[in-house]
Image 1 (spheres, rainbow, N blue to C red):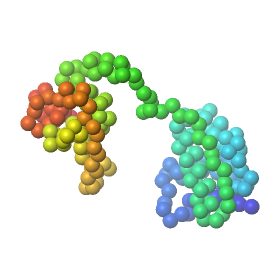
Image 2: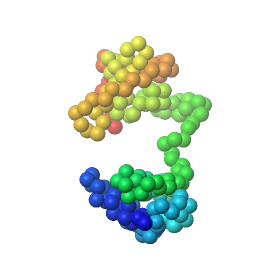
Image 3: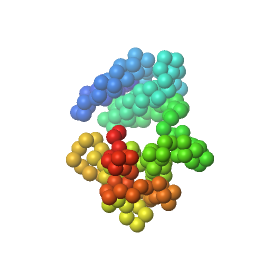
Image 4: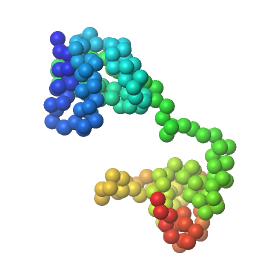
Length: 193
């Protein structure tokens, strides 16, 4: 019967090399789960032998990332025929600050609390969901028929990505008159990040 250690070794030997973090995650998982038979391993086993001990040492988001590596190794074992079916690890709940929602009242308070030169930038970011660099690089040519088109060179490559977002009427009120930029700094230049 194949074990998790064998699944982990198979995953390490795949054609795409693993990152250092994935290698480290697999080493930790091997220590805790390596002896388990893939056919009999349950999510409860992973939780008791790996998740709970790790949660006492590191944050939930770190354990969730480590469990994604474990799940990838298990799925690869199935794809390569080492096992017919495997359990799915249960990731701990992660309180991610990026998903925290704010009320409309708090949003409006934050916009009004911003210094007057920054108020337009803050309002634009809230109402469009733009990334800071997208907002600061936006020009009047990017606005057509109530829609803003953001041009991004994400990842530093030469490939351009276009993303369109409706321009909320409240955000449009905050835009300053300028020949090119939607959100110029007080001196009429591009804000620095």
